[in-house]
Length: 186
Image 1: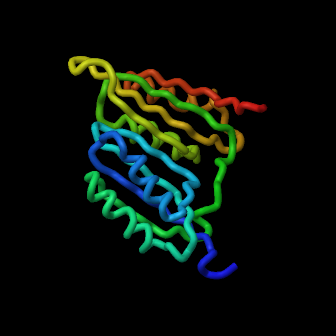
Image 2: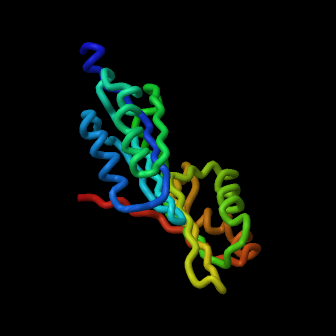
Image 3: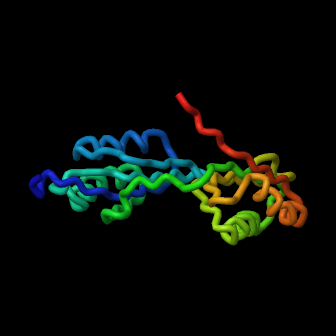
Protein backbone atom coordinates (compact mmCIF):
# COMPACT_ATOMS: atom_id res chain seq x y z
CA UNK A 1 0.00 0.00 0.00
CA UNK A 2 1.48 3.37 -0.99
CA UNK A 3 1.53 6.35 1.39
CA UNK A 4 -1.21 7.92 -0.74
CA UNK A 5 -3.45 4.87 -0.13
CA UNK A 6 -2.80 4.65 3.62
CA UNK A 7 -5.82 5.40 5.77
CA UNK A 8 -5.52 7.78 8.72
CA UNK A 9 -8.18 8.50 11.34
CA UNK A 10 -9.12 11.88 12.75
CA UNK A 11 -11.34 13.22 15.52
CA UNK A 12 -13.37 16.11 14.13
CA UNK A 13 -15.36 18.31 16.51
CA UNK A 14 -17.80 21.04 15.52
CA UNK A 15 -19.58 23.30 18.03
CA UNK A 16 -21.81 26.35 17.65
CA UNK A 17 -25.31 27.78 17.72
CA UNK A 18 -27.85 25.19 16.61
CA UNK A 19 -29.59 25.59 13.28
CA UNK A 20 -30.80 23.26 10.52
CA UNK A 21 -28.20 21.98 8.05
CA UNK A 22 -25.10 21.66 10.22
CA UNK A 23 -24.72 17.91 9.81
CA UNK A 24 -25.41 18.12 6.07
CA UNK A 25 -22.82 20.88 5.58
CA UNK A 26 -20.07 19.07 7.50
CA UNK A 27 -20.74 15.65 5.99
CA UNK A 28 -20.82 17.16 2.48
CA UNK A 29 -17.28 18.42 3.04
CA UNK A 30 -16.20 15.01 4.31
CA UNK A 31 -17.84 13.34 1.31
CA UNK A 32 -15.96 15.64 -1.10
CA UNK A 33 -12.69 14.56 0.56
CA UNK A 34 -13.61 10.88 0.32
CA UNK A 35 -13.87 10.63 4.09
CA UNK A 36 -15.71 7.87 5.90
CA UNK A 37 -17.46 8.43 9.23
CA UNK A 38 -16.56 5.51 11.50
CA UNK A 39 -18.25 6.79 14.66
CA UNK A 40 -20.21 9.88 15.62
CA UNK A 41 -22.15 11.66 18.30
CA UNK A 42 -24.23 14.80 17.81
CA UNK A 43 -26.44 16.63 20.28
CA UNK A 44 -28.05 19.95 21.08
CA UNK A 45 -27.21 21.49 24.45
CA UNK A 46 -29.09 24.65 25.50
CA UNK A 47 -29.26 25.95 21.94
CA UNK A 48 -25.69 24.92 21.08
CA UNK A 49 -25.03 22.04 18.70
CA UNK A 50 -22.05 19.77 19.28
CA UNK A 51 -20.79 16.95 17.12
CA UNK A 52 -17.75 14.75 17.25
CA UNK A 53 -16.88 12.44 14.42
CA UNK A 54 -14.23 9.79 14.00
CA UNK A 55 -13.33 10.05 10.32
CA UNK A 56 -11.04 7.95 8.14
CA UNK A 57 -9.30 9.48 5.12
CA UNK A 58 -6.57 8.51 2.72
CA UNK A 59 -3.34 9.88 4.13
CA UNK A 60 -2.88 12.05 1.04
CA UNK A 61 -5.80 14.28 2.17
CA UNK A 62 -4.59 14.47 5.74
CA UNK A 63 -5.35 16.89 8.53
CA UNK A 64 -4.48 19.84 6.30
CA UNK A 65 -7.05 18.68 3.72
CA UNK A 66 -9.70 18.37 6.42
CA UNK A 67 -8.98 21.86 7.70
CA UNK A 68 -8.92 23.36 4.18
CA UNK A 69 -12.26 21.74 3.34
CA UNK A 70 -14.13 22.24 6.62
CA UNK A 71 -12.87 25.64 7.85
CA UNK A 72 -14.75 27.64 5.19
CA UNK A 73 -17.86 25.53 5.82
CA UNK A 74 -17.69 26.16 9.56
CA UNK A 75 -17.01 29.87 9.02
CA UNK A 76 -20.06 30.10 6.75
CA UNK A 77 -22.40 28.44 9.25
CA UNK A 78 -20.88 30.00 12.38
CA UNK A 79 -19.34 26.90 13.92
CA UNK A 80 -15.97 26.30 15.55
CA UNK A 81 -13.87 23.39 14.27
CA UNK A 82 -11.31 21.11 15.84
CA UNK A 83 -9.36 18.37 14.05
CA UNK A 84 -6.95 15.93 15.69
CA UNK A 85 -5.02 13.06 14.09
CA UNK A 86 -5.55 9.81 15.97
CA UNK A 87 -2.78 7.35 16.72
CA UNK A 88 -3.16 3.66 15.95
CA UNK A 89 -4.16 2.68 19.50
CA UNK A 90 -6.88 5.37 19.54
CA UNK A 91 -8.77 3.95 16.57
CA UNK A 92 -9.31 0.43 17.81
CA UNK A 93 -13.03 -0.09 18.38
CA UNK A 94 -13.30 -0.74 22.06
CA UNK A 95 -16.40 -2.49 23.25
CA UNK A 96 -16.83 -1.99 26.97
CA UNK A 97 -16.11 -5.00 29.12
CA UNK A 98 -18.92 -6.27 31.32
CA UNK A 99 -22.67 -5.93 31.25
CA UNK A 100 -24.16 -2.70 29.99
CA UNK A 101 -26.42 -0.93 32.43
CA UNK A 102 -28.62 2.19 32.33
CA UNK A 103 -28.74 4.42 35.39
CA UNK A 104 -31.42 7.12 35.57
CA UNK A 105 -31.47 9.91 38.12
CA UNK A 106 -34.45 12.27 38.51
CA UNK A 107 -34.94 14.97 41.10
CA UNK A 108 -34.97 18.61 42.05
CA UNK A 109 -32.23 20.56 40.27
CA UNK A 110 -29.25 21.14 42.54
CA UNK A 111 -25.48 21.47 42.18
CA UNK A 112 -23.41 18.31 42.44
CA UNK A 113 -25.73 15.59 41.14
CA UNK A 114 -23.46 14.56 38.24
CA UNK A 115 -20.32 14.80 40.36
CA UNK A 116 -21.71 12.82 43.29
CA UNK A 117 -23.16 10.01 41.17
CA UNK A 118 -20.13 9.67 38.89
CA UNK A 119 -17.74 9.76 41.85
CA UNK A 120 -19.57 6.81 43.41
CA UNK A 121 -19.37 4.90 40.14
CA UNK A 122 -15.65 5.66 39.77
CA UNK A 123 -14.91 4.27 43.24
CA UNK A 124 -16.22 0.90 41.99
CA UNK A 125 -14.37 1.09 38.63
CA UNK A 126 -17.65 1.40 36.75
CA UNK A 127 -16.92 2.85 33.31
CA UNK A 128 -19.32 5.49 31.93
CA UNK A 129 -19.84 4.94 28.20
CA UNK A 130 -22.51 7.63 27.67
CA UNK A 131 -23.93 10.44 29.79
CA UNK A 132 -26.75 12.89 29.11
CA UNK A 133 -28.44 15.49 31.27
CA UNK A 134 -31.36 17.81 30.80
CA UNK A 135 -33.66 20.04 32.75
CA UNK A 136 -37.38 19.33 32.42
CA UNK A 137 -40.46 20.57 34.24
CA UNK A 138 -41.27 24.21 34.76
CA UNK A 139 -39.11 27.19 35.66
CA UNK A 140 -40.76 27.23 39.08
CA UNK A 141 -40.18 23.48 39.60
CA UNK A 142 -37.25 22.29 37.49
CA UNK A 143 -36.50 18.57 37.45
CA UNK A 144 -32.97 17.43 36.68
CA UNK A 145 -32.58 14.27 34.59
CA UNK A 146 -29.28 12.39 34.40
CA UNK A 147 -29.02 9.30 32.17
CA UNK A 148 -25.89 7.18 32.20
CA UNK A 149 -24.91 4.12 30.21
CA UNK A 150 -22.23 2.23 32.09
CA UNK A 151 -20.19 -0.95 31.75
CA UNK A 152 -20.15 -3.02 34.90
CA UNK A 153 -16.85 -4.62 35.86
CA UNK A 154 -16.75 -8.35 36.55
CA UNK A 155 -18.50 -9.21 39.79
CA UNK A 156 -20.64 -6.05 39.80
CA UNK A 157 -24.42 -6.32 39.40
CA UNK A 158 -27.22 -3.85 38.73
CA UNK A 159 -28.62 -4.66 42.17
CA UNK A 160 -25.24 -3.96 43.76
CA UNK A 161 -24.98 -0.60 41.98
CA UNK A 162 -28.49 0.34 43.08
CA UNK A 163 -27.68 -0.60 46.69
CA UNK A 164 -24.42 1.40 46.49
CA UNK A 165 -26.35 4.47 45.31
CA UNK A 166 -29.14 4.13 47.93
CA UNK A 167 -27.50 6.44 50.48
CA UNK A 168 -26.83 9.04 47.79
CA UNK A 169 -30.45 8.74 46.61
CA UNK A 170 -31.67 9.60 50.12
CA UNK A 171 -29.12 12.35 50.65
CA UNK A 172 -29.81 14.12 47.34
CA UNK A 173 -33.57 13.38 47.50
CA UNK A 174 -33.61 12.01 43.95
CA UNK A 175 -34.95 8.88 42.29
CA UNK A 176 -32.28 6.50 41.01
CA UNK A 177 -33.01 3.49 38.84
CA UNK A 178 -30.55 0.89 37.58
CA UNK A 179 -31.30 -1.70 34.91
CA UNK A 180 -29.34 -4.07 32.72
CA UNK A 181 -29.56 -3.50 28.96
CA UNK A 182 -30.38 -6.83 27.41
CA UNK A 183 -28.61 -7.29 24.06
CA UNK A 184 -30.89 -7.94 21.10
CA UNK A 185 -30.06 -11.16 19.30
CA UNK A 186 -31.23 -11.61 15.70
